[in-house]
Image (tube, rainbow, N blue to C red; front, side, top):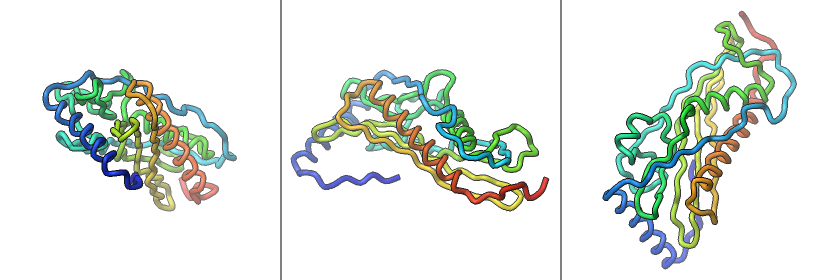
Length: 231
């Protein structure tokens, strides 16, 4: 998902650039303290469509995110905390500048990981769309997901601090008549906020809710057969 901004005044742009340069230079010296967040997201349908009488099994959910080495933007996934991140890559979800100069990663709390959260959101979105989620290999359909983006970051602006979050996945629903595929993105852009963990937590949770809402809407609109084509 691309985020476009209107051109800003040259002086303000220079100030934002200088601040961002300071953040990146400070990261070379030492890492800031890692931030731990607990994700909050829908675990039950917020509304119910009519029962489709169809069952769905959730298959593999993969984490296909790519991490770069010390990129020039915090919006680009990177493993800033080398030792910790290599052990916990499934829980790395962002980057922050904790003390205004040094960059560190943001992690999900113990018991949470990227694949697990997307799996949960896919399950509840399917239920909201009227499907019954089962573990049965003989289900009418099988849903899979590939997580392409799951990231929270801070962008220094001229006058404010912006905390952004994006969650993007490629979802496939396979059945006897073929496969339906979709790319789903959720996003949140919070402005006029501090650099406190609560700011990042708010952006993350709102981004997850946006992803869930869009995913459920897309699943509701799918033209799946009203009854299984075969068993």
